[in-house]
Image (cartoon, rainbow, N blue to C red; front, top):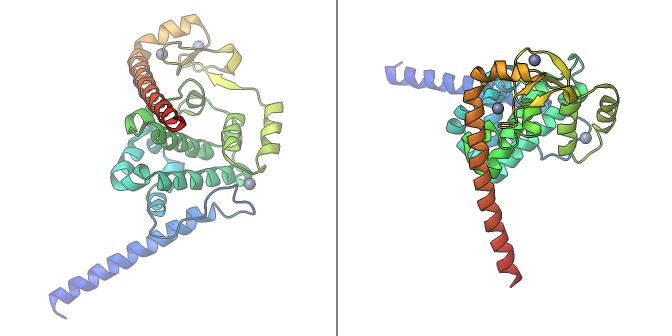
Length: 265
Ligand SMILES: [Zn+2]
Ligand SMILES: [Zn+2]
Ligand SMILES: [Zn+2]
């Protein structure tokens, strides 16, 4: 066999292997969407669809590795699958797929006790994608626009609990699948948080947030003061980003206002 034909055979084998790996990954994550209810989310994208490509490459790291949620993996996906970020319909479809998967994790993943960390990681990625949709800026999306409410609850490293995660998904599905679980959780699980300095877990009503960044939380004034040298950098960055994204959302609002006004005339 001539060398060039041998090379081609090698290439073919490689391509076949890659194709098999792709279809296996597709089976793994799409099986997570198979349940009696689709929770009002979009149909499963076919193999070769940009959303499928994202899921094939990032689904496993997304549910298993913190690095994806903390940003490095997602920044990479911004390079390797730019269309799922930049095309609104692809991004929305991806969010739908992730909502469906996270919801099924909560409904059927009974091995986890306490907060379902896989569903929590998926939720963090959903938030980042949603925020990207608002600001179209990956850095703003990663640090999070809404640190004041959802983000500080769901941000990695921040103590979270089942009822927050249930609420997050329940708000995003059009069915009633999570209603019972969420109501039960609200009855028996208090809202929990964790002091960033002493790591003490306690009910959220007994913690105060840093009023500047609204991210870190403390059990006492002493803990807040003691944590400041470590916290300062993040606090500066987060409050800057809040300011920037406030300016952006202000600009968007004024444009929307002008459009509305224009249509009325
Ligand atoms: Zn449902
Ligand atoms: Zn403390
Ligand atoms: Zn702060």
